[in-house]
Length: 75
Image 1 (tube, one colour):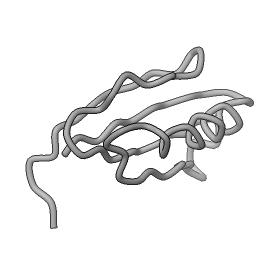
Image 2 (tube, helix red, strand yellow):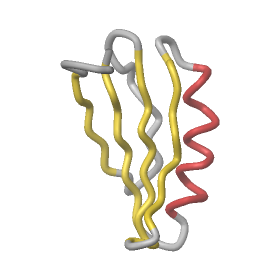
Image 3 (cartoon, one colour):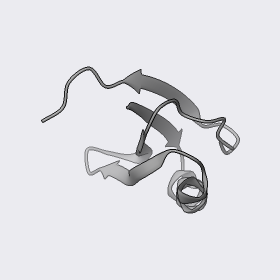
């Protein structure tokens, strides 16, 4: 399993990531995802998505930074 994090900042961060979140379930291997915000960093929004196997090529919105992590252990 892999976890993909997508990070956006600024006034339109949440709106852009909400649209991105709607696309994810249509892609192969999608398991689930959450749109995350922090009261301590209101300009920052993240999507954490989980994938069976490798993360496929994703249509990231402009200006979004992203990382893929391998899950080594889960409970």
